[in-house]
Length: 124
Image 1 (cartoon, rainbow, N blue to C red):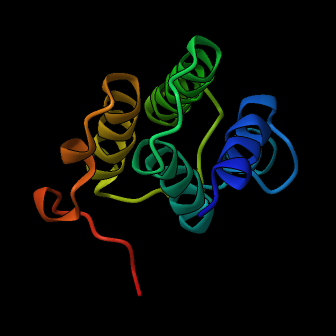
Image 2: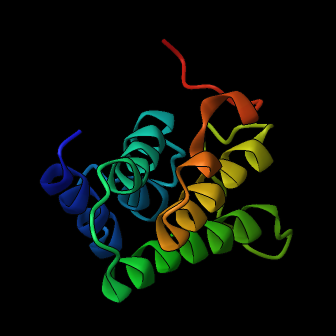
Image 3: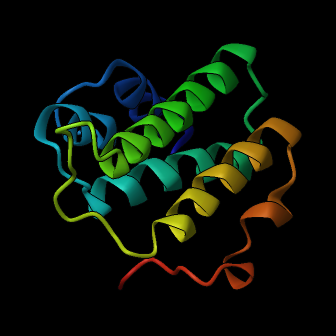
């Protein structure tokens, strides 16, 4: 994935634009695994391409991660009507992927996104 495309995917998620992972969570109450992987791969691509780190981009990725955490909390809150369709039972594995991608980008450490360290693998 080219850096320009990766940056646009992250911006779209940050803004909650149509068909982004955050859009599906917030507007459709749907956990889109396809949109998740697109987001994950965009963060990984920035790390792998060696794109110069940007405080703004780190803040946007962090805010996306924080929103994801909130939606998961809302999903499990018995006093909240919010529930996510297609919510994976192994959601911790998805969180781990995004968390490590954020750390990899912010630290410039590509070892944090090596596929072999994760139980969760992208479907073929």
